Structure formats: C-alpha cells, structure tokens
Image (cartoon, rainbow, N blue to C red):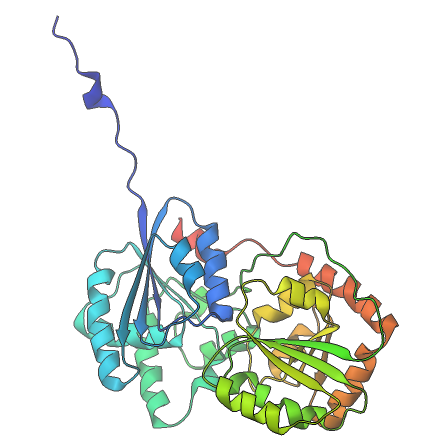
Length: 365
C-alpha cells in the first residue's frame, strides 16, 4: 500500500487579517494614546500604520506596537495632500480593514477615493469637534471630502456625544453606524497615593502638545489674580515651546513658578506630585489627560468648555472662565476636604472606563 505523505495534510496557519491605520501625523497626543490602546487590544491582526504628512514626533510607542510603520512625510499643503492621497492607494489595496484616525486622514481618503475605490471595511474616528476644525472656505471643501470618504463607513466613532451630534448634523456618514466610544487608555496599576497637604505652593500639572489649542500661553495672565503661590509644571513638546519660554521668563518675578518640563514617557510621578491637573485649553473633545488624572485621584481644573462640562458628570472637574473664577476654583482645590473627596471621586470615575472597544470588535469580526 502506498505510504501517505502526512506533511501534505498539515494545514497552514490561517492568514492574519490585514489592518491599515491612516493618520495625518502623530505628535504624542490623546489620539495617539487612544490608538495605542486599540493596537494593544488587537489579536491575530497584521497592522500597518501609515502617517501621511511631515512633522511627526514622539511616535515610538505606536511604531513598537505596529507590525509595520510607514512615514510618507508629504508637506502639509494642497500639493502634499494630493501626493499623500495617491501614495496611500498602494496600501489601501493590500488591506482588509482601513482605520482612519483623524479628520486629516479622512480628508486624504476623500481625495484618494477619486483615484481608487476605498475598501468596503472602513472605520473612522474623530478626535476633535467638527466645528473646531471649520475655519473658512477650505474647511467647506474638506467637509465634502470627508463625506466622500465616510459615506459607506462601517463604523464612525467619537469620544464625545457632542462630537457625534455635530457629525450627524454634517451628514458625514450613516447615522446608524455612529457610535460613542471613549478613548482607550491604560490605567496604571501602581498604588495611588493622596497628596499630603504641606502648605504653599499649590501644585498644578499641565500636560499636552505645546500648541495654541492647549492655552498654556494664557497661564501668566490667569495666575495674575491669584494671591497664594502656585507651582505649575507643563509636560509636553510642540511648536510653541520657544514662545512659551519667553512668556514665562517675562512674567518673572512672580509669586508663581511655571516650568516647561518637556515630553515624558511616564506622567504618573508628576500626577502624584500634583494637587490637581490644570487644563487652560481653548478647545477639547474628551482629553485622555483627564482620565489619567482621575486614575491617580486628582481633580481637574479646566476652561469652561462643553467637553469639560460633560466630563463634570463623570468625575471631579472644576471649570473657570478667567482669572477671577480660576482663583475661586483653586481656592476649592487648596481645601484638604475637597482634595480628599476628589481623590475618591476620581478613582471611582476611572473604574467606570470600559475596556470594550467597538472598533476592535469590528476589526476582528
């Protein structure tokens, strides 16, 4: 009897699903942290992350988590947009699922759809309020391109109900496929500690990309009406760094100190040092830093924006409109009793964060 070659009957391992993540750029912000949370949650998926435009920085964590990491480095210009959109089509045709991370990548995919039909499995996320991105005629053209890209998207998410409402108003995609999904972040497992009250100064920690959006340039003016000394540390890097250094130097001498620490990989020791997280932002959606602060039992003192008004229902947030109302908010933070209650409230809020992701579920379905 002829001997059967058993090796012929050994099944090959199943082919991994191919995911393409398209990002306009990565600069270490909240959208990037959310992407890292998503990449950690994926299994049996080959992931390629492509950034379209020049100026990426602080992206090492994403490149480590992805199977492939490609930077196209096109200039941030209309010509660069067309070039990046053409270049991405090669990656599109090799992918089972495409995940578009931010508005800039939605716009590029809208242009790419002119050259090549987009894959049927398209997922998109907004990490900024659509209204915050609309500045003039160019944004009207971009809105058309976003609609072109997302008209057949299988899933469109945002970490804010207000953002979802604006997405519906602008008809960016099928209403039945719009889903609220909080940013996925990793809660640190190290034991939390209360900040023991040791008198002045009041310690405030700010964190984010050094850009106009974050409002760090407002800090000297905001602190001008505060009688008790404050110590502010700012974590992050960005295009406004030199301007901020000049502003803070010009504000001396002062009862307050403001330090630009630079970008750090671990915010936990700084949060544990602080009395509160400080966010003088000009606009926000659902910043990851709020949840990171709550996970260490720290309250948040933030500009009176819709995003923070929404977050007040979930955890300890004090809002302000200017120097006078900031003085009142910091007066509350300086109270031992408030910080004790905020510690408990923050930890409780961080426990409500879901680890389930509709995006991950859709990719792996």
